[in-house]
Image (cartoon, rainbow, N blue to C red):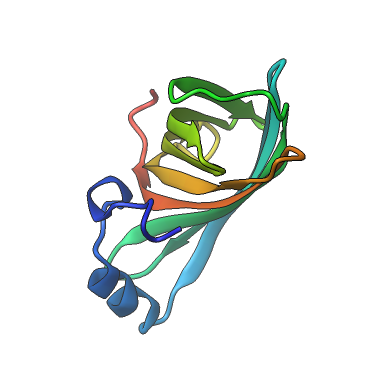
Length: 141
């Protein structure tokens, strides 16, 4: 997974992340969002953290995909009843690996988040992965 996630898209380097988690951190928000198309169904369990240094988020991604689906150009909108909206804009879905840029907004909390997600998919259509990035108080995208 770390080979597929870039520091540029995450918004922090690995050393910055190590510094972030060595000081007290607080979970600020969490959200469970889902998205469904004809070819895939994904769920992201998103957790936003903050401390005096930064505001980061991390998520697990699970779901199913039609085993015949292969596209390096795909998009999926994930939402929930609270109005949280996160878009995965994929640029890789091949060789049992996937990658996407992440952009989202949580209107009640007024939070914008950006980052990336990546993972694997099996020949029988099981999708797994992780996501991460930074968040800030929103501009209402």
